Amino acid sequence: MEQLEGISWEVPVNEELALGMLRAQNDAYIRKLGIACAFICGFWTIGGVVAIAYAAGAGTLDATLSGEGTNNVVLGIVVFFALTAFGLFSAVHPGAITRMRCRHDIKPLRDLLAGKNGGASLTITLGKADVTCDNGHGVIALPYAAFSGKTMVDGTPYLITGAKRDQSLLYNLAGVNWALREESFLALPIPQSVLRAHPRLEGAILDTGFMQERALRRKDPEETETVKAFLERARS
Image 1: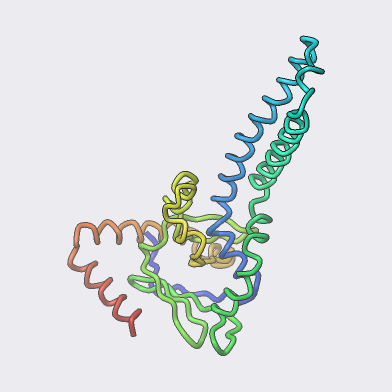
Image 2: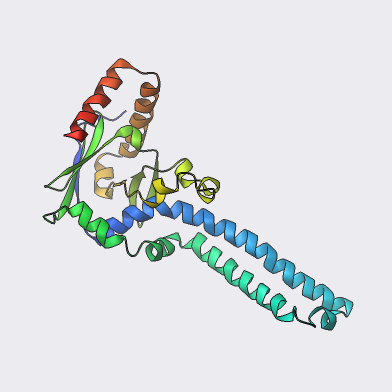
């Protein structure tokens, strides 16, 4: 496994970074939601069209479309067709939906990353037990165990903190863990230039996080002390 401690890189703090973090946390869920919407609404759209086609073939179309329910039948088909199209668009272009949904969060997140004095860049450093993000005025530290998956946003790889149940469609529709996705921006950008210098970096971070999490569950003394030290730094 690649040695992580001491590897460092900088990313510019701007709205592109803020949007990238939001997309990294949300795009997979939006894609799943779009697929589900397209499947369910497409089923009802096709069902409505087939019912009308069957009525036309049986010579009962006029009776089917007569009365007070006529507008409801046609409107229902139109609405379900529109929802199907929206679902397909969300599945193919989740980033556009995330941008629209999170448009009011982009600037505040950029300002949060920049800090009170408006830092222009974020220095990301890999340590023994954690990853630190320093904007020159404050530090955000995360243990490796926090990262659970990876994704790609416009050609830039991101390690994300919500790749398990936090990205589950069923869990989120049920209201479980929604805040960890909707309210979390903790995604780690790794520029391609860094990956060229360290080709196995993504896997090494995730593997280290997995081993760290497993050691904590076993209450491994060394790993527990390491995380305790991390928590003490985080509180200071």
